[in-house]
Amino acid sequence: MGCAQHARLIWRLLVATASASSLVGPGAVGSFQGGGGGRRFGGFARVTDPPVGFFLGGSSIREMNGLYSREHRVPWGFSHTFTFSYRHDYTGWRMCLVNAPEDVTKSTGRHTEWVLIDPDKADRFRHDGDQYIPGSGHRWSHVHRTKDAQPNVKAGNAVAQAVEDDEEELPWQVVGVSAEDMMNHLKRYFNFYKHEVQAAIEGSKLPALPMGGKGRATAPPEGFQPPKAAIADEADQSDSCSEGHASFANAEAELQELQRQGGQVHFDWSLATLQLRLAICHRRSKDFDAAQQALQASLTLYPRYAAALEEMGKLWIDRGVYEQAIHSFETLLRVDRKWPTVAGWLVRAHTLQRRQVEQFLVEKPEVLKGRTEHCIAWRQTGGCSPTGLLEPTADKSCKAVIVAGNSGFCQCVSSGSRGKSGFAPATAAESNCDHGPFTCAEQCQERSKAEAGLALTAEAAQLASEVSEAVDAQACSLLRGGEFPDWCHPNLYRVLGIRCDFPAAEDGDELKRAYKRRSLQFHPDKPGGSAVAFQRIADAHHVLLDPEKRKAFDEGADFPRKVEQDGSEGETQKEEVEKKYFPDFGHRSGKL
Image (tube, rainbow, N blue to C red; front, side, top):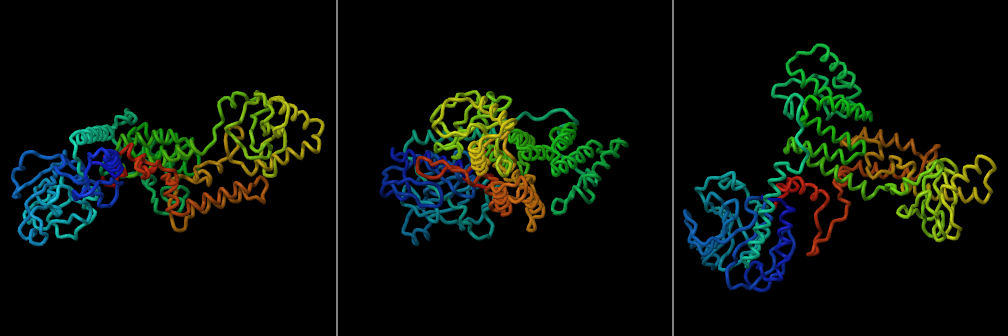
């Protein structure tokens, strides 16, 4: 049971109470020092009584990890002579101090040994005895003296196979629990954890299961032969939507022919798969409305069609609507918890949503409400200079009175200088901190009249030009018309204008084309070009070109991690999201 994140929580819970002498480390000599997860032997504790229980973690045999409670009756059906026996609360594994075989006593000088016994009653691992608390990691070793045990799939790994010992199977965390109240506290936590796992499996916190249509099928039936145009070889790096048997034109033609004829075997699934293919091609060509219509047609037939739900989530990502993307992927999870890519897409959608919230400016409601015919907002700058760094959190409404002590400028709808690139805003009332009171609504209207009639004074025109040039260098710190250009977005795929699932390939044709197109569009030497945009596009290409950098961006590896009470790093963005949806597996490949 459990996962890597769950193990860290248990470990921290254990360590947090170490000072209360509820925990004892291996060896029963000295004082327990606690510690984080990972491979270590831990500290030591001087104990005079056996622990009431143990926590084991870090083994790749997931069923072996967890809490072990002391048994007060001698286990039945074993060949051992027991000193102490501790049983896993759920899986049937045992951790026991037993009389050592004669040959072991001769070689170690110890009369007892610790053994980990699987539910088949087979000894799997051993540790030197004559101590209340065994160590961890390499202090344990695999046992090969059991010859007649038969493997049980519930035990995690087979026993009687002649394979090389796997050190990943060893218990890398072993902590004794000396206090009954601490043991009960840990058991309550494990019960809560099991409840969370069950709720996740049942999907009680996910969107409702889609109903209606032609049934509850999540995929075409076995033996279904999809239309030729619905099958695309995604491994082929050519544009399969433009050419080949699965091109958009062929898919559309085959769909129309099906609709005309009707009545074929699996007719509805043929329609659904062709609509999905059309949606994929529409999204690839950035016709998002048409893609959504095709997907809705497919999902109207089969609301639980898993591949169509996945495509809907990708469409919402490409549109930049991450809440809806999360909803689509959560619906997919509810429909098919074992869908191979659902965990990855949930991580990506949540990561993009977090990037947008933390790294993307949103106009304050009071600023939006204060817009007028000529004015957008007052934009605050630092350093008592209108050419200083923008301070978006201090922006004010067009109708707000700007008093002395505030530097900045009025962003106007159409009047004023626009800088060399055309990205700078129209401005008015470019001000340092020493000025009389005014409103931007009045100033933008006056600037509009001045430019429509008499020219601005040379001094005013020069200042407006300087402000525009300063803002040009901060293009992604200023909203224009309530939104940023695409190249300002924290979503690097959107910066390059490329789909979220473009294939990774050595030649990278699709990425190359996107980079070339955007670079030419915003080259500083071209009209409407921008050095800031050009650099932003180059940076995005650098990340998405490298598979490792792309993966790190998709998973939010750059996000800061919390510092836990024991000083260790908290979970990554990826681990946080996966724990939310998969508390039974955590990051799905991890171990407790």
